[in-house]
Image: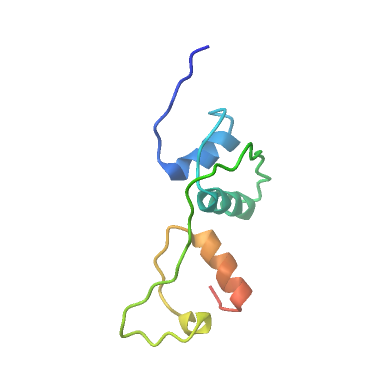
Amino acid sequence: MPIDILRVRDDDIPGLVMDGVVDLGIIGENVLEEELLNRRAQGEDPRYFTLRRLDFGGCRLSLATSLDSEYSGPQSLQDSRIATSYPHLLKQYLDKQGVRF
């Protein structure tokens, strides 16, 4: 049985799996969680099944500021302009910290 392999951007993989375009995707859980939150925010009920967690890779999302920033915790981000590839994960984090987003 032949296998077709599609090279696509990692951000596109969860949607391709959830929309039934592909049968399997290999992605980081951060990318998957961002897409889940995005779809839920749009009123969708995303469906997928994690077949197996692979025994390699890892991800840690971090907050980074300039050296001259007066950062004393998440509250000091209030009313800041924040650049991110993960707006839904960031909102979830800031909501838990009580910071308006």
